[in-house]
Length: 526
Image (cartoon, rainbow, N blue to C red; front, side):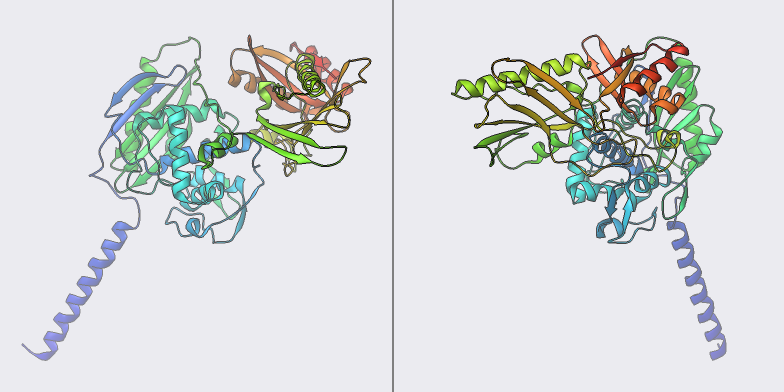
């Protein structure tokens, strides 16, 4: 064989090997048909939690990006608690910036609004966006994963353990088709004001307009309105989806699909089965949301043996004083306990404070007035349909000074950074007694600018029902309630739907307009 022929053969071999290598890279570069992932499926009547179909549903498998539902759930709870707002600027960590695709394209040290990270994680399923959220709240993927696992147990997802914010394959990062269906149900009922993000076909993620990874199924299945896709090699093609028809809502989960078309076809079969088996009509039995707060999270993570939620410190001015800070949710109508002391004068002071708080709760239907929001940068309708959040827990201080033991004040903690509507700042509540001779407690409610009035539009059987009525009323009566605070207050007989932070004139006008349309309404005032 000639030297020239040998050279030609060598070139052919090199070209063949190069083409083979390129083919291998292309095959691994994106979601291809998966044959190894185990299959599992679960179908639930979302209204009641009833199981309609189950196959391998409690087997612990790789959830892939269905994980991001939990990351978003905790994020929504942080917004609800007032610890962050949608406009909070998040500094991207090195860990987040190093995440593999799918990506928004974040850079280490970059600052971006939380609302854009939420959109990117929910719609595009961006791994870097989800990791940036987890690292912001907990500092490391390990701590965030531990928090996700704690929350999962509170939701009844007993077979789920998480190691990261985005669902990339990691040892011990496992869940089940049943648990992820439970997760989807809690997202729908616990945070209905956010749920619409999962149905958007595309959205502005700040750096780019991103498309929904689930848009094909949303467009093809009647009534579908969410919620999350997932894919990795070990997981296969996963999907948790929800749809509503004629008042019946079904939620289902598929693990281990072999391709996007196969997964969507299987989901269609499962939802169809669910609608056939679900009973028509009947009462909705919403899941119980966990009694969660960020302060409880701090207590859960604390390494010290100090009492949770209580801090005592000495303050100067007007004689020695002590401040007892009690962290409580506003919706529970907080009543601070009297401080145990030997001096009769201090005991009288704390009893007066307790009476003042009780009177304040009775006077305004158990709700503490909160400060009105700053004007929203966009219209309220856009804000309400967009990611919105409501009440923030208040941290109250009881102060009794030795110089004037009969003077008792309830004051708010130092103000947190202001949030854009519809996220509201905490109210300043002051209860002050008269001189000892009169022994009369006078309750004053101040909500900045004399807006200590509100309106009640009814009592409902569940928190979610009351909140949805408030949202619907807000959208239809924006002219008078545009700057009001939506507030659901739990009572022994149900959940009161209130709008707070209004002037007397605004409250009266709003009630007159609502009553003219047949809506039950009465005013509350200081």
